[in-house]
Length: 244
Image (cartoon, rainbow, N blue to C red; front, side, top):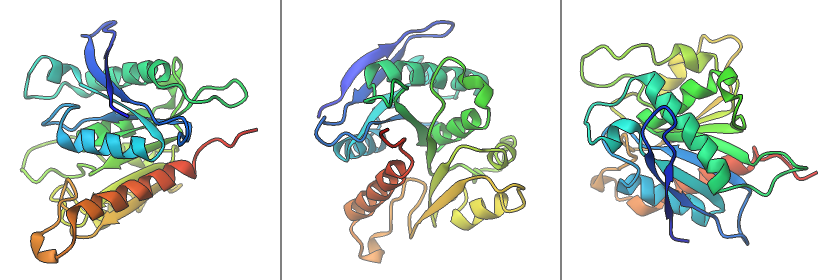
């Protein structure tokens, strides 16, 4: 089904452009994935639209949105509190735009995540359950290419401590050629956490930060993405609230 554009009300911030990719009723799993973009491109970037469409076709409704700085056509991302506030507003809008079937009168099964920076901000929210008083808490978090350690030498702040505090099931999809850190680096970064956070790292063999593989590998790029999408939906399905 084609995405439907809508706007997220501003509240204390600007109105945000968004889109909902509603799963077909016949295949819908009852999951709503709020999917945030990375630092350098908005919610209409091909990676975002391709993955949103693919997950939708597999039964997961998807809502994408722009962060405020992208709406203002700025290149520099907003500070974390602004990004987090926009993400929470997107979740509240997603509940209305793509409601799940409900389970005994409860809210839909919400999953949050994003590409690179968007996934990092999702983990910020997941590590702060007190911030979910007005919206359903997420059933899971999905980060596509977690930006563990940006390759450029500049201070980026602590990107690990909050991961160790996560109690929400989290899937980190990480290419083995990711210059921000591969699957092993992500695992090593959280290895000393006690108790261990419920983080699953899904390696993408030969994949870079966007899971692109080298042509010399002889593998089909579309098939690589399709496999990732199948695995992500299987992970979501395993975490859905069962019907009573």
